[in-house]
Image (cartoon, rainbow, N blue to C red; front, side, top):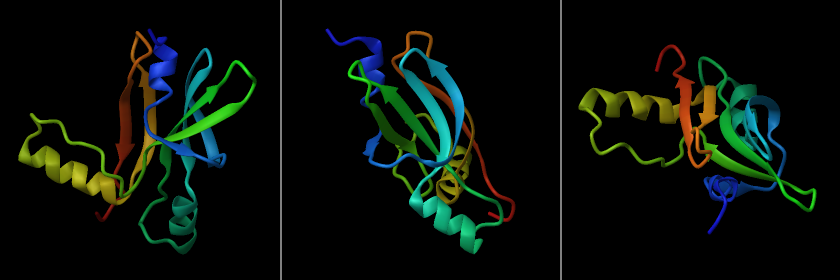
Amino acid sequence: MPRHNDQVAMIGTPYAAVPGSAELLYESGNISLFAGETAEDVVANQVGEESSPRNSLFLRRRTKEGKTEWRLFLTSGSDWKDADCMSEFGRIWVDDIRKCYKVVRASLSKDGRYVCEPVGTVPAGI
């Protein structure tokens, strides 16, 4: 049976580079959550596409072999699933967040199997 950290380490998609401007949000053992910039975030922030900077949510895992693995969890334009019980207002708000996501806070669940509270902001004017 897989350990909790192994399960949470499989969320998101593999990310080959170290995120730009990485800021630690949460750490538990060999698993950490970071706000950071993808290559697309860097370009959007440099050209001022949005009215405020955007970033993305990353998971970092340190393996027993001493390697570091990065996974991209949430980012602008991504296709994360809406909750089935979400209201129409909630869906509109989430669509706005998808356009230009900026991570504010995130943590892991108490059992370490899920990312919870991935809180972001929407730039003014969207």
